[in-house]
Structures are given as C-alpha cells and as structure tokens.
Amino acid sequence: MSEYDKMSDEDLIRSLRNGDQGVSDYLMEKYKGMVRQKARAVFLIGGDTDDLIQEGMIGLFKAVRDYQPDREASFLTFARMCVERQIYTAIHSSNRQKNMPLNSYVSLSDETDAPEDLMKVPEFIMDNPESIVISQENERQLRESINQRLSKMEIRVLELYLKGESYVRIGAILNKPPKAIDNALQRIRKKIKESMEE
Image (cartoon, rainbow, N blue to C red; front, side, top):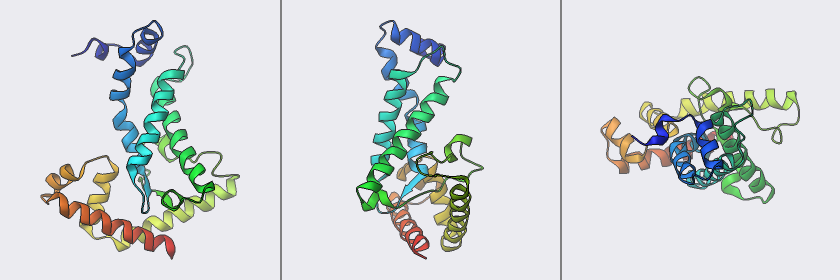
C-alpha cells in the first residue's frame, strides 16, 4: 500500500503544491477508470472511444493542476466536472468542424446506473429549458428504439462496455471469445446508427 492511499485527495493536492510531484501520477492513475466510464457513456457512432478517453485524461490533468483544496467542492466533484467539460468541448468543437465521427453521439448511460452528474447536459449544448426537455424525450425514444433492436446478448455486451469492461473481460463474463464481443459491438453500432436515422 502506497503512502498516498492513506491520504485524502485534498491532502494529496496540498502535498503536490508543496513539491511532491509523485502525487500527480498517483491521481491520474487513481481516476483514469472514472475517465473511461465518462468517455464510454458518450457512445460514438463510427468513432473511437479512445479519442474521448484522451480528451478526458486532459481534463483530469487540468483538474489536478487547477484544483484548490480550500474550495467547497471535493477534488472528485471538480475532476468529474473538468473531465466532462473537456469531453463535451471536444465534441462541440468537432461539430463546428463537421467531423462526422464526433458529429453523431448520444449518451447511452442508463440514468439509474450512471453517477448523477454524468447525465447533466453542458450549457453550451442546450440553450433553454425547452431544448433540454426535447433532448431528453428524444434520448428516451432513442433508447427504447435501440433496446427493441438489440438482442439480449447485445444489450448485455453494451451494458458491460459502458461500465468500462474490455473486450476480453466481457468475453470472459459472457463466456464468449473476444472476437464475438467485437462483432457484437459492431452490430450494436450499426443498429444504433439505424435508430438515429429513423
């Protein structure tokens, strides 16, 4: 067990500000799972989640760099906000550039499973309450359409994928080879794209 494991995040940040550079690597490692979860929750149609994971890690780095321990918010709350902002800013920027892989995205995290703040829509995406309600209704209808199209096995693969499991781990859980999981995810992407085009 590392000496860092016994310290609160806020104490770790104070230690970092006092010159302990090892804290930065420790916090990046500690919270990279959270970054993966948030990146996977924004499912890219024809894109690669790895791009969003990279953006999320940049957001996490900014959180480590900028967090002030004397603020009311915890480091974790601040880090989540920074990661989300970085991911959504990348999507928003990509939309302006008409980059197709990032232009079509939808959050597929079930609100009951996702951390509460994961489902918040950034201010720059929604201009007013009416837009938010319409977007939420559209997302609900899309989820229903997707669930109707997917097989039970595909739904399970998608659930595990969104929780951050690797192809190999999903295969082990479902007793399927990784190639079958890869094929299932390709079918899922295709069916989601078809649902979005309806």
